[in-house]
Length: 111
Length: 113
Image 1 (cartoon, each protein chain N blue to C red):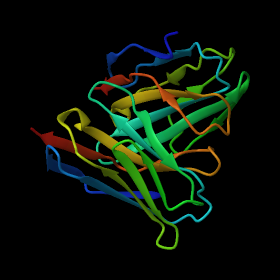
Image 2: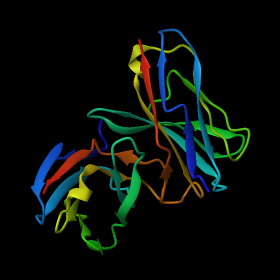
Image 3: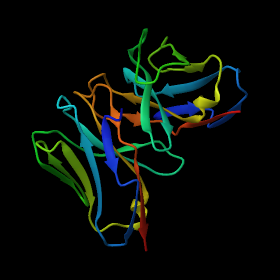
Image 4: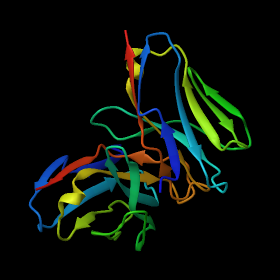
């Protein structure tokens, strides 16, 4: 049973466009929601994270939107660049305890 | 400062063989964990350790053993490899059990034939 559901599986965006990846969860005890970025042949690396006491967090071109009532959160990449082409994973945990990852989204940004 | 180092990067095993995937970190992190990454499944936790001498099972522990004799090292053992264990394995470490950032190694791609 997937604790965190992620969509879409793959995404193709033109350079300069907005990339949006969505995740949903069921366990209301989750209190930490990170996004990881993974390049081919590399391990995942923390990109940005949010706690449920805020509805949005922005770091540069990357924004997490969080909807606690809907139990959904999403990653928005503004002004997408070819260098953003990677696999993105959302995750959820309880106070940094065991992390549950989504199934990943392969993002391709076309020049 | 190398971060999290995994060896080997690639391995092919025959069914029934045993092997150990090595993981070492030089950040003095207390918390270490092993994940497997499969297409369409994301990353799933196999085993984790909150400190030297302490280990526990994650989401998919069957077929794997771990030990943590030092803070730096957290090896993952496959006692009798099965084709279902073909996967990419990632080791990760965090400052402590409640830390929110995990640092991942570069992965070991294992194929069991």
